[in-house]
Image (cartoon, rainbow, N blue to C red; front, side, top):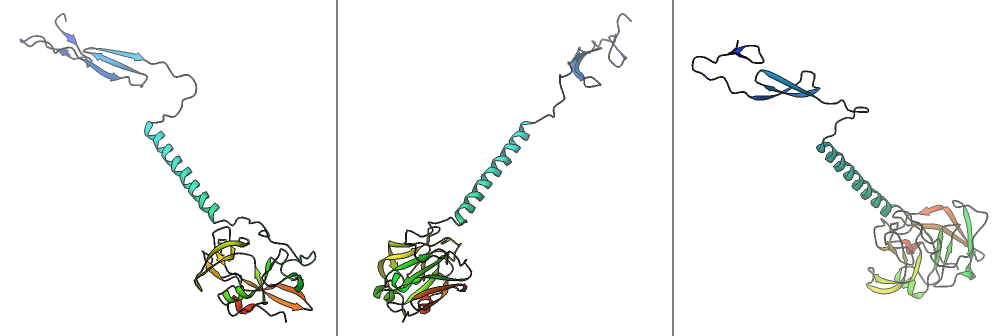
Length: 251
Ligand code: FES
């Protein structure tokens, strides 16, 4: 056995017959139980045992896995931000309740949905408006110019407009200084109902002239008896370009 060497299979290698013995090679080999890495030199196996990790075994996380989680988390945050922004833009925001106008004729007794007194004729001169918060109504009395812009209304007539924007429900204030062209007659003048939420714009009679609102401002049934004005908030007529025909003459 002096001229024989034994490999890992236990077979002897021939060193006779003129053939040199096979070169000794180092072959990596994994230990059967996975506990270490070994190297097999021809005929010898060396196993290097690795120490067992301390503490509980943690799941292995690959770099690809981390990138995937980061990507989807970032995408989720971005979509949530876009969604929140859209909802914020569309959701009705509260406008100043009276739009800077004088509050006259409020009632302490009649809830919205019923018949509500909204003031007397002497409180509403031609060209003036009353914003009644109980009735959620604008009482508008036309002067000559306003009536001319809203035919067939006549000067002195009165209309009761629901102050809720038909678009998404914001309270619509009166903006006496806001000026724009009236597409109905191509005249430019100041004084419009202007929704602060998305810019829908309405004439003195609540006729929509601009913006995303689907129709003109709605109107309430209005009666005038003995100089006292009363709005029936249970009787709402949807707004239309014919709003001026709903104005009544106080007599
Ligand atoms: S709520 Fe959108 S324009 Fe008035």
